[in-house]
Length: 155
Image (cartoon, rainbow, N blue to C red; front, side):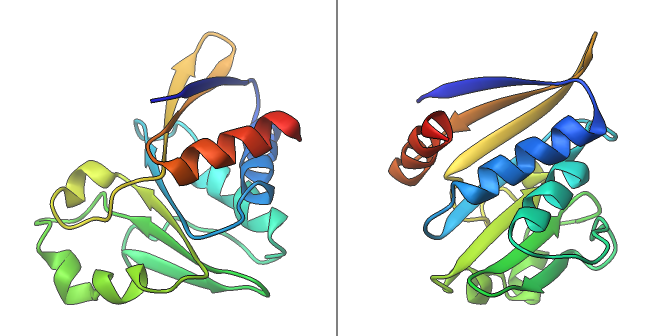
């Protein structure tokens, strides 16, 4: 599996990186966002959504579990599974219905809380604290993820 590392020295750099990844999306893509509290998962999502034309506030869907964003080209579903008590709760929420939309982009924070019920990731993004701010380690987990990496490199 292919990996890429990105230094993120500031909030604006985290948002800019989310924007760059969003612009590289060309088909349904599932992103896993992994990292401790405060490492910038929702900040990254804010940049991602902004690049796709969303102008409103982006908040973590910690209590609602999923926040849908209907945009011109895409249906973006921002998931936060931090408070999920049992992965089977995803069935009650209807996660399978969300997975069947070809024009969807799935941003899934805390995917470890949904093991066994989540679709496989195309790209996993691990956000870590570093001496200079944050660091993102991206891993392509599928052909779709590898293609996205190529577009990022050419951008």
